[in-house]
Length: 288
Image 1 (tube, helix red, strand yellow):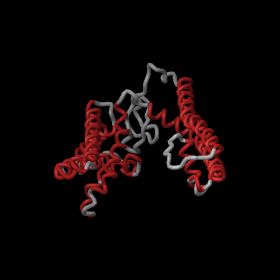
Image 2 (cartoon, one colour):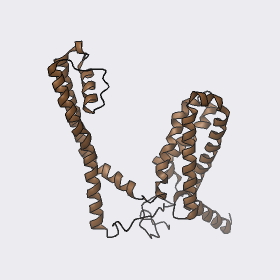
Image 3 (cartoon, one colour):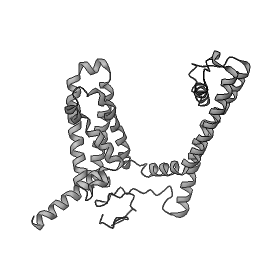
Image 4 (cartoon, one colour):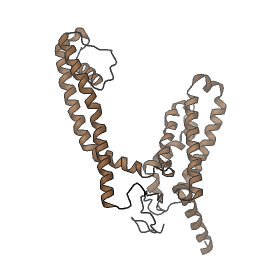
Protein backbone atom coordinates (compact mmCIF):
# COMPACT_ATOMS: atom_id res chain seq x y z
CA UNK A 1 0.00 0.00 0.00
CA UNK A 2 1.41 3.43 -0.98
CA UNK A 3 2.58 5.66 1.89
CA UNK A 4 -0.10 8.24 1.03
CA UNK A 5 -2.82 5.65 1.48
CA UNK A 6 -1.27 4.44 4.74
CA UNK A 7 -1.21 8.00 6.08
CA UNK A 8 -4.79 8.52 4.93
CA UNK A 9 -5.92 5.32 6.65
CA UNK A 10 -4.05 6.28 9.82
CA UNK A 11 -5.57 9.76 9.82
CA UNK A 12 -9.04 8.25 9.28
CA UNK A 13 -8.61 5.84 12.19
CA UNK A 14 -7.39 8.65 14.46
CA UNK A 15 -10.37 10.81 13.51
CA UNK A 16 -12.82 7.98 14.15
CA UNK A 17 -11.10 7.28 17.48
CA UNK A 18 -11.36 10.94 18.46
CA UNK A 19 -15.09 11.01 17.71
CA UNK A 20 -16.05 7.69 19.30
CA UNK A 21 -13.82 7.55 22.37
CA UNK A 22 -13.47 11.20 23.32
CA UNK A 23 -15.77 14.10 24.07
CA UNK A 24 -13.42 17.06 23.79
CA UNK A 25 -14.58 17.98 20.28
CA UNK A 26 -18.00 19.02 18.93
CA UNK A 27 -18.13 15.84 16.85
CA UNK A 28 -17.30 13.70 19.88
CA UNK A 29 -19.96 15.40 21.99
CA UNK A 30 -22.53 15.01 19.22
CA UNK A 31 -21.74 11.31 18.88
CA UNK A 32 -22.07 10.74 22.63
CA UNK A 33 -25.41 12.55 22.72
CA UNK A 34 -26.63 10.55 19.72
CA UNK A 35 -25.47 7.33 21.38
CA UNK A 36 -27.23 8.30 24.61
CA UNK A 37 -30.50 8.93 22.74
CA UNK A 38 -30.28 5.58 20.93
CA UNK A 39 -29.55 3.74 24.19
CA UNK A 40 -32.53 5.33 25.95
CA UNK A 41 -34.82 4.59 22.99
CA UNK A 42 -33.66 0.96 22.86
CA UNK A 43 -34.30 0.46 26.59
CA UNK A 44 -37.74 2.08 26.32
CA UNK A 45 -38.58 -0.27 23.44
CA UNK A 46 -37.54 -3.26 25.54
CA UNK A 47 -39.81 -2.08 28.37
CA UNK A 48 -42.78 -1.47 26.07
CA UNK A 49 -42.26 -4.74 24.23
CA UNK A 50 -42.67 -6.64 27.49
CA UNK A 51 -46.22 -5.30 27.85
CA UNK A 52 -48.42 -8.11 26.41
CA UNK A 53 -50.96 -5.82 24.75
CA UNK A 54 -48.29 -3.69 23.05
CA UNK A 55 -45.94 -6.57 22.27
CA UNK A 56 -48.57 -8.47 20.31
CA UNK A 57 -50.11 -5.44 18.58
CA UNK A 58 -46.87 -3.80 17.41
CA UNK A 59 -44.65 -6.89 17.12
CA UNK A 60 -43.44 -6.09 13.59
CA UNK A 61 -42.70 -2.47 14.46
CA UNK A 62 -40.72 -3.47 17.53
CA UNK A 63 -38.64 -5.96 15.54
CA UNK A 64 -37.94 -3.39 12.80
CA UNK A 65 -36.87 -0.78 15.37
CA UNK A 66 -34.70 -3.35 17.12
CA UNK A 67 -32.92 -4.23 13.89
CA UNK A 68 -32.24 -0.55 13.17
CA UNK A 69 -30.77 -0.09 16.64
CA UNK A 70 -28.78 -3.32 16.34
CA UNK A 71 -27.26 -2.21 13.03
CA UNK A 72 -26.30 1.13 14.61
CA UNK A 73 -24.66 -0.63 17.56
CA UNK A 74 -22.92 -3.07 15.21
CA UNK A 75 -21.37 -0.26 13.15
CA UNK A 76 -20.31 1.50 16.35
CA UNK A 77 -18.81 -1.71 17.77
CA UNK A 78 -16.80 -2.39 14.59
CA UNK A 79 -15.55 1.21 14.46
CA UNK A 80 -14.43 1.01 18.08
CA UNK A 81 -12.38 -2.08 17.22
CA UNK A 82 -10.77 -0.82 14.01
CA UNK A 83 -9.94 2.63 15.38
CA UNK A 84 -7.49 1.39 18.04
CA UNK A 85 -4.12 -0.31 17.60
CA UNK A 86 -4.79 -3.07 20.13
CA UNK A 87 -8.44 -4.17 19.67
CA UNK A 88 -8.20 -6.75 22.48
CA UNK A 89 -7.82 -3.95 25.02
CA UNK A 90 -11.33 -2.82 24.11
CA UNK A 91 -12.95 -6.16 23.26
CA UNK A 92 -12.17 -7.72 26.65
CA UNK A 93 -12.74 -4.57 28.71
CA UNK A 94 -15.89 -4.15 30.81
CA UNK A 95 -17.55 -1.80 28.33
CA UNK A 96 -16.34 -3.88 25.40
CA UNK A 97 -18.19 -6.91 26.76
CA UNK A 98 -21.29 -4.82 27.47
CA UNK A 99 -21.18 -3.40 23.94
CA UNK A 100 -20.93 -6.92 22.51
CA UNK A 101 -23.86 -8.17 24.61
CA UNK A 102 -25.86 -5.14 23.50
CA UNK A 103 -25.28 -5.99 19.85
CA UNK A 104 -25.51 -9.77 19.64
CA UNK A 105 -29.12 -10.61 20.75
CA UNK A 106 -30.79 -9.99 17.39
CA UNK A 107 -28.19 -12.06 15.55
CA UNK A 108 -28.75 -14.92 17.97
CA UNK A 109 -32.38 -15.11 16.83
CA UNK A 110 -31.08 -16.72 13.62
CA UNK A 111 -29.58 -19.53 15.71
CA UNK A 112 -32.38 -19.64 18.28
CA UNK A 113 -35.71 -19.27 16.49
CA UNK A 114 -38.34 -18.23 18.99
CA UNK A 115 -35.71 -16.97 21.44
CA UNK A 116 -36.40 -13.31 20.70
CA UNK A 117 -38.37 -12.70 23.90
CA UNK A 118 -35.89 -14.71 25.96
CA UNK A 119 -33.18 -12.20 25.03
CA UNK A 120 -35.09 -9.21 26.45
CA UNK A 121 -32.99 -9.27 29.62
CA UNK A 122 -29.74 -9.23 27.65
CA UNK A 123 -30.92 -6.29 25.57
CA UNK A 124 -31.76 -4.34 28.71
CA UNK A 125 -28.03 -4.42 29.60
CA UNK A 126 -27.66 -1.57 27.13
CA UNK A 127 -28.63 0.75 29.95
CA UNK A 128 -25.19 0.11 31.47
CA UNK A 129 -23.69 1.88 28.48
CA UNK A 130 -25.09 5.15 29.80
CA UNK A 131 -22.21 5.24 32.30
CA UNK A 132 -19.82 5.59 29.36
CA UNK A 133 -21.63 8.76 28.30
CA UNK A 134 -21.15 10.42 31.71
CA UNK A 135 -17.95 11.92 30.35
CA UNK A 136 -19.96 14.58 28.51
CA UNK A 137 -21.56 16.01 31.64
CA UNK A 138 -20.30 18.63 34.08
CA UNK A 139 -19.96 15.88 36.69
CA UNK A 140 -16.94 14.41 34.94
CA UNK A 141 -14.53 12.92 37.47
CA UNK A 142 -17.14 12.52 40.21
CA UNK A 143 -17.84 8.93 39.17
CA UNK A 144 -14.13 8.13 39.58
CA UNK A 145 -14.12 9.67 43.05
CA UNK A 146 -17.15 7.62 44.07
CA UNK A 147 -15.58 4.45 42.67
CA UNK A 148 -12.40 5.10 44.65
CA UNK A 149 -14.42 5.73 47.80
CA UNK A 150 -16.31 2.45 47.38
CA UNK A 151 -13.09 0.51 46.75
CA UNK A 152 -11.45 2.07 49.82
CA UNK A 153 -14.52 1.26 51.90
CA UNK A 154 -14.80 -2.33 50.70
CA UNK A 155 -12.69 -3.98 53.46
CA UNK A 156 -14.63 -2.18 56.19
CA UNK A 157 -17.96 -3.00 54.57
CA UNK A 158 -17.03 -6.67 54.21
CA UNK A 159 -16.12 -6.86 57.91
CA UNK A 160 -19.38 -5.14 58.75
CA UNK A 161 -21.39 -7.53 56.57
CA UNK A 162 -19.65 -10.48 58.21
CA UNK A 163 -20.71 -9.11 61.60
CA UNK A 164 -24.30 -8.76 60.33
CA UNK A 165 -24.27 -12.38 59.13
CA UNK A 166 -23.00 -13.55 62.53
CA UNK A 167 -25.73 -11.55 64.30
CA UNK A 168 -28.37 -12.98 61.96
CA UNK A 169 -27.23 -16.55 62.61
CA UNK A 170 -27.16 -16.07 66.39
CA UNK A 171 -30.48 -14.23 66.62
CA UNK A 172 -32.09 -16.58 64.13
CA UNK A 173 -31.07 -19.55 66.24
CA UNK A 174 -32.37 -17.87 69.42
CA UNK A 175 -35.71 -17.09 67.75
CA UNK A 176 -35.99 -20.69 66.59
CA UNK A 177 -35.56 -21.83 70.19
CA UNK A 178 -37.94 -19.19 71.57
CA UNK A 179 -40.76 -19.42 69.02
CA UNK A 180 -40.50 -22.92 67.61
CA UNK A 181 -42.19 -24.51 64.56
CA UNK A 182 -45.70 -23.72 65.82
CA UNK A 183 -45.06 -19.98 65.20
CA UNK A 184 -43.64 -20.54 61.71
CA UNK A 185 -39.98 -20.80 62.73
CA UNK A 186 -39.77 -24.34 61.39
CA UNK A 187 -35.97 -24.46 61.12
CA UNK A 188 -32.87 -22.42 61.89
CA UNK A 189 -32.37 -21.38 58.21
CA UNK A 190 -35.97 -20.11 58.11
CA UNK A 191 -35.38 -18.25 61.38
CA UNK A 192 -32.20 -16.70 59.96
CA UNK A 193 -34.18 -15.63 56.88
CA UNK A 194 -36.75 -13.97 59.18
CA UNK A 195 -33.95 -12.24 61.10
CA UNK A 196 -32.37 -10.84 57.91
CA UNK A 197 -35.73 -9.61 56.65
CA UNK A 198 -36.42 -7.95 60.00
CA UNK A 199 -32.90 -6.57 60.41
CA UNK A 200 -33.05 -4.87 57.02
CA UNK A 201 -36.49 -3.42 57.91
CA UNK A 202 -38.07 -5.13 54.90
CA UNK A 203 -40.66 -7.03 56.94
CA UNK A 204 -42.55 -9.30 54.54
CA UNK A 205 -44.81 -10.45 57.35
CA UNK A 206 -44.84 -14.09 56.25
CA UNK A 207 -43.40 -15.08 59.65
CA UNK A 208 -44.00 -13.23 62.92
CA UNK A 209 -43.20 -13.97 66.58
CA UNK A 210 -46.18 -14.56 68.88
CA UNK A 211 -44.57 -15.02 72.31
CA UNK A 212 -43.74 -11.99 74.50
CA UNK A 213 -40.04 -12.89 74.59
CA UNK A 214 -39.97 -13.37 70.82
CA UNK A 215 -41.66 -10.02 70.26
CA UNK A 216 -39.18 -8.35 72.62
CA UNK A 217 -36.24 -9.83 70.70
CA UNK A 218 -37.85 -8.82 67.40
CA UNK A 219 -38.12 -5.24 68.68
CA UNK A 220 -34.41 -5.19 69.49
CA UNK A 221 -33.59 -6.54 66.02
CA UNK A 222 -35.78 -3.88 64.38
CA UNK A 223 -34.04 -1.08 66.29
CA UNK A 224 -30.64 -2.52 65.36
CA UNK A 225 -31.76 -2.53 61.73
CA UNK A 226 -31.89 1.26 61.51
CA UNK A 227 -28.29 1.53 62.62
CA UNK A 228 -27.16 -1.29 60.34
CA UNK A 229 -28.62 0.42 57.26
CA UNK A 230 -26.80 3.68 58.07
CA UNK A 231 -23.34 2.19 58.67
CA UNK A 232 -22.32 1.33 55.03
CA UNK A 233 -23.54 4.73 53.85
CA UNK A 234 -21.50 6.43 56.55
CA UNK A 235 -18.38 4.44 55.68
CA UNK A 236 -18.57 5.34 51.98
CA UNK A 237 -19.39 8.98 52.76
CA UNK A 238 -16.40 9.26 55.09
CA UNK A 239 -14.06 7.74 52.48
CA UNK A 240 -15.48 10.03 49.79
CA UNK A 241 -14.89 13.10 51.95
CA UNK A 242 -11.38 12.05 53.01
CA UNK A 243 -10.54 11.29 49.37
CA UNK A 244 -11.53 14.80 48.32
CA UNK A 245 -9.47 16.25 51.16
CA UNK A 246 -6.44 14.22 50.10
CA UNK A 247 -6.82 15.45 46.51
CA UNK A 248 -7.07 19.04 47.68
CA UNK A 249 -3.91 18.67 49.75
CA UNK A 250 -1.86 17.00 47.00
CA UNK A 251 -3.18 18.76 43.89
CA UNK A 252 -3.63 22.54 43.87
CA UNK A 253 -5.88 22.17 40.84
CA UNK A 254 -8.39 19.98 42.70
CA UNK A 255 -10.33 22.89 44.12
CA UNK A 256 -14.03 23.67 43.41
CA UNK A 257 -13.02 26.20 40.75
CA UNK A 258 -11.07 23.63 38.75
CA UNK A 259 -12.25 20.42 37.17
CA UNK A 260 -10.38 17.87 35.06
CA UNK A 261 -12.24 17.55 31.76
CA UNK A 262 -9.79 15.44 29.78
CA UNK A 263 -11.57 12.54 28.06
CA UNK A 264 -8.70 11.41 25.83
CA UNK A 265 -8.27 7.67 25.35
CA UNK A 266 -4.99 6.33 24.02
CA UNK A 267 -5.41 4.93 20.52
CA UNK A 268 -2.60 2.45 21.10
CA UNK A 269 -3.16 0.93 24.57
CA UNK A 270 -6.66 2.22 25.36
CA UNK A 271 -5.47 3.91 28.57
CA UNK A 272 -7.61 6.66 30.11
CA UNK A 273 -7.37 9.35 32.81
CA UNK A 274 -4.69 11.43 31.17
CA UNK A 275 -3.65 14.74 32.64
CA UNK A 276 -5.16 17.87 31.13
CA UNK A 277 -2.96 19.12 28.31
CA UNK A 278 -1.04 15.85 28.01
CA UNK A 279 0.50 15.23 24.57
CA UNK A 280 1.52 11.60 25.18
CA UNK A 281 -0.06 8.61 26.85
CA UNK A 282 1.01 8.20 30.48
CA UNK A 283 1.13 4.40 30.02
CA UNK A 284 2.74 3.66 26.66
CA UNK A 285 4.00 7.07 25.47
CA UNK A 286 1.87 7.06 22.29
CA UNK A 287 1.03 10.47 20.86
CA UNK A 288 -2.38 11.74 21.88
